[in-house]
Figure 1 (spheres, helix red, strand yellow):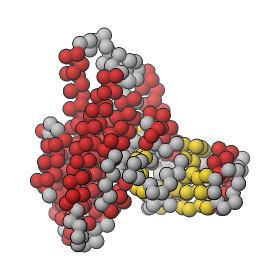
Figure 2: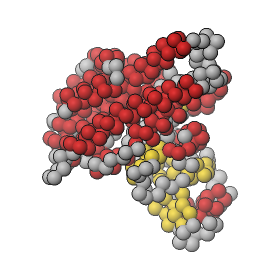
Figure 3: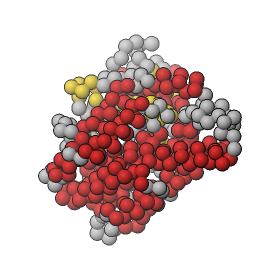
Figure 4: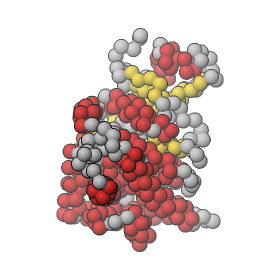
Amino acid sequence: MAFTEFRPLDENSLIEYIKATPSLFSKIGDSHDGLKIKEVGDGNLNFVYIVVAPSGSFVIKQALPYIRCIGESWPMTKERAYFEAMALKEHGVLCPRHVPEVYHFDRTMSLIGMRYLEPPHIILRKGLIAGVEYPLLAEHMSEYMARTLFYTSLLFRSTTEHKRAVAEFCGNVELCRLTEQVVFSDPYKVSEYNHWTSPYLDRDAEAVREDNVLKLEVAELKSKFCERAQALIHGDLHTGSVMVTHDSTQVIDPEFAFYGPMGFDIGAFIGNLILAFFAQDGHAGQGNDRKMYKEWLLKTIEDTWNLFHQKFTALWDENKNGSGEAYLPAIYNNPELQKIVQEKYMKELFHDTLGFGAAKMIRRIVGVAHVEDLESIKEASVRADCERRALELAKTLLKKRREFVSISGVISAMKQVQ
């Protein structure tokens, strides 16, 4: 094997690598005639190559030892590829319909070979910007979240299995620290990395940095993020980590995966849908005011949580006499008590979801990395109006999350802000 130490691959060395790797070479029919390789990594961190031959295809993703969009001045562990491959495999077993299959993983090269999600698959975020409706999105994402979160939690597992799994993912500390910085710290202080639509949001960004109540709530969420090993979470489940067609939904890029609070994943996804909702006015044009599309987004947000709640509790009911050690059947031995336990758990999870979702929204408006939904609105004053409404809602959700009893209350609050 020619690749015994790490080096970033380019298109030529990648062909060599594929030829030396049977699990990849066999996917393209053992021939590199007509082989096409295209680099498509538009993300902040990695190289991503699409490899297509007449008889097969796959994607190669290689992690670099620094943040790609910033360069070598911001080093970053390439070990993240190991955690991404582990999470893809684990989540792939639990929810094969919505996670692309891993064909090959090379720890030395920090390289993953996996199923190519061929066109018409596109990044969900781009579809939302274009105003495309995905009728199965809430159904599919609620399924993915319910299965991956339930089956990696103590509701299903013994504490021994759970501890072993937590230990395995504890090594992903650098990416957790990146999240701690960009989600729970930077937006609330003066940081060289923060930026926003200036001068329009100068006062709003300052208000975030001066809001004591907000800071206390964020501290509580940070503590949960750092200390609560509830389930194997994706860790970066925004609308840029989901690829879609009309009838397929695939979750990619779990390099931030670790054992953390479930609400962080659900909140990230719902928070990004809320950002997409507030961005719509900036994308409305002649002949399309996007009003119908905003209605679809509201329904999708509501359905995502309600379907998740339904599927998660159904899995719990099916497995309540299983090996899960959170609530031992010998103790929680009557339907009335089981119902109380379940309601308390789901209520707390809902409030976590709103808190984390709001924190993710705030960092996308006044922090380091923004979202294309808003960034692609060309007119700065229009963009700032959309961002301000999203920010107002996020602050309300974060501070008053415990006052919301249902997702329909969140939908009402969104309508009031717009």
